[in-house]
Structures are given as C-alpha cells and as structure tokens.
Image (tube, rainbow over all chains, first blue to last red; front, side):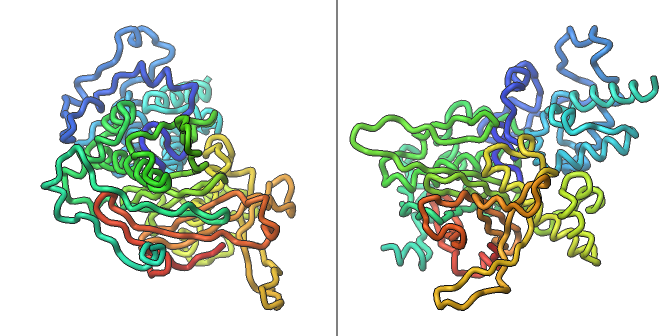
Length: 142
Length: 318
C-alpha cells in the first residue's frame, strides 16, 4: 500500500520534517550496493548524539523506546534480527499509512493513552513516538 | 503495432542480459499516450526478479538522492522494493516520451504535500507530454499509474492483508459514519475485512489523486460508496441497476464530488487495486463516462505483458 521509499510514502513526506530527518544518524543506513546489512550491537550500542542525554524533559526512557520498538516490529512483521532503534524512521521500515494507524492504536492500548490525529501525524521516528507517549502518560498522571 | 502491444507478450532480451554491457540497457517498449479518460497501470512483482545484475541496471537509473534513499531502507527486502519502485517510475514514464527521454534523465519535484511530480527539462523542438503519475506498493507488488494531464491516485493492497486491530475499531476511528454503517451490515468477519481493505484502497487513491495524501485529507471527512446510476447506454435503454463509485464530503452528504471517478479491481489474483482520476472537463459526456483502464505487467528491460483483458485484471467496479 505504501508508495515509494523514504522520499514519498503513502502519507507523503512532510516537508517541515526534512531537516530533522537529516540530523538523525540511524545505523540502519550505510549499505553497499550488494545490499548486505550491517549488523550492530543492538541494543547495547546506540548512536545518539550526546546533547540528547541532557534533555531530560524530552527524551523518553530506554524502556519506553524498547517497548515501542517491539510494537513496531510486531506490526510490520520484521524479523528479530532487523535492527529497530529510536532513530528508525517508520518510512524506512516500510510502514504504510495503515501500518502507521495500527501502530498508533497499538501504542494507545499498550500505554493506555489517547493520541490525537494531529500529534500522530508528527511522528516520523520510533523516538518521536516514545517521546510523545511519555508526554501523554505524564499528562495523564498529573 | 498497437494490436501487438495489447495482445502479445513481448519478451525482450530475456537471456542476453548477462552478456549485455552495463552501459547500454535494452530499449524499453514504448507506449502510446493514455487518452483523457484512460489510466495506464504498470506493475512489477518483485519475486519475479531473479537476476542480480538487473538490480545494478536499475540502480544505474536513479539519481544520487534516490540511491541514498534506497540504501537508507532498513534491510535488503525493503531496499529491493524501494529500488524497484524508482526503476518502475522512471522506466514507465520514459515509455511515453517516444524514446526522447531516457529513464535516467527524469527529474522530479514534490508538491507542497510531498506528492512527487515530473519536472520536465526545456526542449526546443518538442513539447513533453503532461504526464501525471502515482505509485503504490506492497511487499509483493509495485504499481505505477499514468494519466495524461489529469491528476491520478493509485493504491494497491494485498487481498490477504490482516489487521491487528478489530476492523470496526479501525473503521470507527478512521472512516466516515456512512462507511462504518456499511461495514456493520456485513455479518461475516472475512467479508468485513475484505471490504475494509477495498474501501481503504479507494480512500487512499482519492487522497493521493487530490495530491494531499493521508495526512493532508483526513479519511473521516469524506465518504466513498456505491451510488446507483441511471445512465443511459448507447442503445437508449436505461441501466438503472448499474452502480458507480462516488465520493462525497461528510459535511455535505448527497452532493457528489463529480470531479473524480474511480476504478476498483483485483490485480494478479493477489491484490486489490484502486485508481482515482480527475474527470476530463473537455469531455461533453463526462458525467457518465467511466474510467478506462489498460494494465501491463512488467519487468523493466526484460519483459512486458499487456494483461488488460486477462484474468490478471478482474471484478472491475467503476
């Protein structure tokens, strides 16, 4: 159902997030033309830019990110050895618009939150989803 | 020549790829331009691609930016799919340029919602055809629809696609009340699932034809359904039991958005496919004329087969 790769999926790439996408360095990139997958020490090795560590109010807990990864992998039927991390972009994981809505509903169920459509549209990476979840969980309990 | 295009399978160089130098890929079968009411749909089945050197040929057609995007996909299967999608778009469009534009030469830009369109170079002695296109893919098929000068949206989905969430829960959240009501009339879960998928592809095709995509045109705001039509046939008899696919805004029920017409069908026995195209305002009988469809199965540079009148395209609803 999705249209082409990261540049134009069924939801269409959102121009305002193009800059953000370039900042992210996922290690799901960097492949040779022969399409071999670079295996990394997931989950012990994570290429997060250092400043994020100090943004305590924004970055989600590793357990939250891990849980989101699990839900995403299940929805997209990815094999256990497919690296999915906070930096993973949904479009690069082959998620189409139906996958995306199913993932959102799966997250709502798992975390007992409710995600507004507008917020859902702004999620492009696993980390985005985890951050939003923690924000909503916190808002619920406060 | 056009009879050959329609009726025969035309294998091109199927065994000679390994001996062909990379610099000169075999010529593509050219195609006549679609007429104003016509959608041309070209699809490729990734599993039919067995020759790794073909992947290199396709990679060679891509822009550096596209190559990077392909390589950013997570895993070999997704990379192959992304590569095939770009190769399909480029080779398909090239067929309509009378051999003047090679697949590699195409440039693309995006509209403000991110929908890709062709950006033509300036030619002194030739007016490029105003081609509109849209692609869709699943893990087992990639499809590219082409129309002349009229916006088009295409969406395909595997018939067997299962949802993790309950169908009615999904529908209540994302579909219009009329559509939910329709799904609720279906007593058995399998029918419900199939109809959900078909409706999803129609809605997706519509928002892609609009150029807005899923995020730019909320599914909840419009209804797609069948409307009984009383169009007269050429013989003068009224076809009162014929029905056509229509779209209306939830806020303005009964006011059909006649600008758009649709086709929904089964493709390759494996997929549901939906096409949405803007109607041609120059057509005097545009209200009644339905969308015409021509379909080709392709493996670019290897073989093309017109499958329009075959079992690969069936159960067409317009």
